[in-house]
Image (cartoon, rainbow, N blue to C red; front, side, top):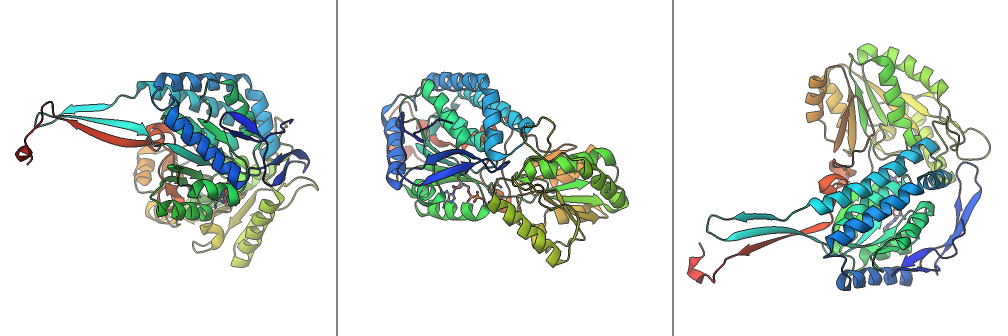
Length: 484
Ligand code: TXE
């Protein structure tokens, strides 16, 4: 990478005046690039540029320009898809096949929102008293978009595309450890027809960059994806000025395997659900609930399958699991594995480092777990799964709902009516029956309970970036006494 300037403010690349940071490839611990992050003052400059663009450019009012720019961006990204996938793999350690999926989904998301923008019409109705009511969705203003390191590009676009589509201007902050695809993406933005200041990029950590964005009086909306503790802080900060906020936070999602499920397929889905992206996925099915009558056969199948999982160089086409994101995160996951053993759970498989370079961990399986254990209640965000047995649908539902989270769930069964009945009683924002993980750009994504506030994707994702205005029109001036 040859970037010398790492912030994009008011339509110009600007050299950072904040902390210098080395960006590391987690697969081999080599240096990818050294970046210099934004200072507090530069972060404020980015907000100012976004504000100015919102107040003075044609962007908020010109739907067609927005549609064209987003399509232009999608076209450029598609041409460079393979470079983006390679960069994402280098920076995050995710297997190259998964990075390709991310980039494809990114292009789809840009196009979906561009098309949605052109099809949205204001709601209008003649009311019972002869007046006409119109309901419009307007952009909120300046949006701060803050994302984590597990899907740096995709999660960014889940916010950038609807925010821009709705006519807002944005300041985007990727995670401090995964800025590479954001820099590349911003280069594409620079080549497109966006007015200066509509999109701004700042690099940096929560303190000072993230906090400056969240507390800035000129930021009208914060859209945050990340850990629950940080999300709580962001929410508290926003509450002070009633700033609009949406939060996509942690999860501890259950996958329920009913007794009529095909065991081989159930094992495949369980491994995919729990260990996709090394388990560093907000919706990872980190709790597998299996009907007692198939529990032992399922476990045998799972252990057998895990022997065959290809853990290694994420650039290799055959690789199914790469390294976890960083040395710090690897140590955090290992602490949880130790904690699980101390709590009395049985580590049946994995949880060991592999190789001397890179942050590799073999997939860990815990059995003999009980609901109160921290390894079952807290988001570990790594390749660690717990297996529990149940004997009735009621018990499965109770166990599944028995954490503070409610992001996602899965049910595997040949009886889809029964699975849907179970789904109706699960407290989770996304539920897959007989599959797992696919995000559908047209359908909402987000959490019940402490997994967040608001929804991304789908029309709901766009609504999260709009203010609703109701205008009621009386054709003639009415006398005040007319009001009932
Ligand atoms: O996330 P953070 P981290 C969980 C996961 C992980 C833990 C910590 O368990 O181990 O969180 O990960 C920015 N104001 N998840 O530290 O801190 C930060 O710079 C504003 C689950 O990486 O939540 C980054 O851009 N912004 C989650 C983003 O917030 C702040 C995905 C996320 O960082 C800030 C990621 C502040 N005060 C982690 N502090 C999921 N479920 O998807 C930090 N940031």
